[in-house]
Picture 1 (tube, rainbow, N blue to C red):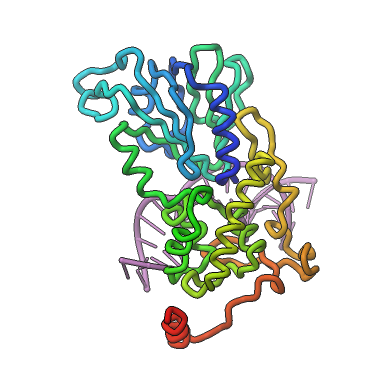
Picture 2: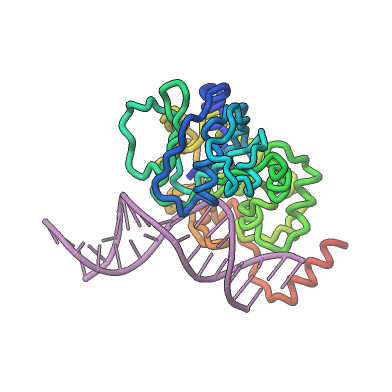
Length: 308
DNA sequence: AGCTCTTCCTGAAAGC
DNA sequence: TGCTTTCAGGAAGAGC
């Protein structure tokens, strides 16, 4: 499943292929995962791709209209985006099984290809997504700031102090916090588990019960794991491939993810799997000791004491 | 308000 | 063997 390193790898690939190209046509299959398919089809043709960036797990294409929208009639003129505003943004989230690839128009189209952006150089940008957990939306230039602000900090850019402020003040379990895109943008299940193992923190620990030392270790390991994964072009589990259809190699470095029952590479204890925040969470029961089972009242007293 | 649970979807794998 | 059931997971929205 694509998380920050996979999306970053895809963005870097697309960045070499797309800026300068124009979108001639949009073809859609199933559209239940697209915010406004009519708007998507009407507002993109005639746009030139200026840049490709990443907001958390969203891939963002900055588009500039080089010719007037074909259907700028009274009906579509009411729409913010179609009404001739020059700069718009196409945002794509890959969900679980989404793939965004650039192929020659003549190349065969794989099943579950639900959006095809026909380019002006004989190629196509294709969105393929078996489960359709992804999302495609178009935003006016004026809406992008607000959209970004609803997401949390980028884990590669966040300072240790900001990390501690966002995580160390929260009651939720650390695994839930790492997965919450409004806290940090871009973390997913694989890198949450791998970071927690490296920082020796149990996934069910509460954010506000982590020590300063643990917060510091987690901040460091989150960044380290993500940077290493980007270097190896992401993790290919399930069906992830980058913009050129190439799989990543970080899955070979996984220490806990999908290793239930196998020995911990640090201490040889058997890796366990539990459900935290509705997600499979893999951890080493010896390196990552579980929080003590305590009654709620005792937890509160402890939390107050710890805060001093 | 803040946190957790449920739901969407498909294909792989387990179960019978 | 072959059909049926179960499960995985990102994030919106419901529920507590």
